[in-house]
Length: 481
Image (tube, rainbow, N blue to C red; front, side, top):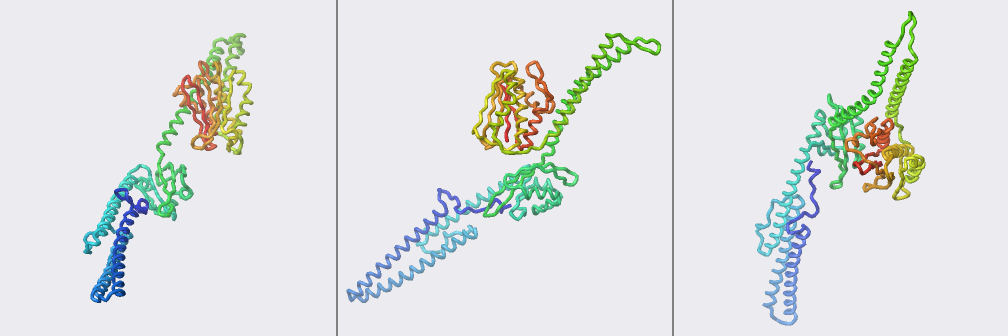
């Protein structure tokens, strides 16, 4: 785990806004200055000695100066060697991350006091910086181990370098040492993990013993010290999926029960009425029975109504079958503006009959979309028909089609109307199959699967469809690809 979080930068941050490079420059400036002073003094002494040798006969003075020159040379060599030893010791301490030493009591003469203090200060700053980084490392390790999402990190060879407690709880009976260890869970699961790239997302169903996991996986790749690592998060969303699945079944069951009861109730009532009419109005004459014309007419009307409701129920069942058999997209590149123009042309008669104006805004005008044009056209037609129904009888009714690229770089198509809008409770149900919304005091005609089909088509394209509405402020449907 430390291999992931640890890593020493080139320049450690030091107090006083000074980097290690600045400190070393200061040290070498001091060393250079002292070296220049010694060399200049030696040169001056040699110059005096040469002058005395050439111009005078002061042999005693020349002898003394020669001794001084010799002493200066020996002292200069000793200064350089001692400085080199100090520098070697200092650089070795940095190379091996050994910051326990101290240069303040090295036993050298006072000329090296400033150099010793500088080395000691630098090592002290290194100690403080390493201590801070170790505390940060411990903090990050604690966070990683205690979060509820499972985390596993692999290096470029597929070996595990980090695995937190939550990940171990997800796979308690498996020793995870490399990405190939997941073959013991499922070969397809191990293959999916190996194939995930940077910012990869997927859902996987995994069986671990008696437990079934619905895992949401998210991967990220990063580099440290030239090595490539892959971090994968595992989140078991089994309970959330079961809750949503139960909620979906409850919603669709309510709609199905409502639609079926709307057909079964009058059928049962009318069949009971027909039975009562036959029992009460039939006149028996031996083996023959007769019913008057008026009663026969009532029975005929009742049977006709029963027949109509049965056909309506059959259409409802066929609509449900159509909802479960959506074709796969046959994608191609096309211009969005031409598609919108074609939809408006197809529905021109309905716009005129309902006195609704249309407006199209496409930015840029040559905006291209890679999708199935027939299916996308069907989605836009479904939404437009709903808009025309709710706009019937509204003053200044208008439908605006917008197409463009959003901030995330994704193509968006929106259909806006200035109708009465919807309450939040209705807005949350409009995508439920077979749910029909009221328009004023009149119900919207249709099977109630248009918006459900439209959302499913968008999902098959890897996109989304959502609606925004407020009472009195109209409705906006947005198709995001």
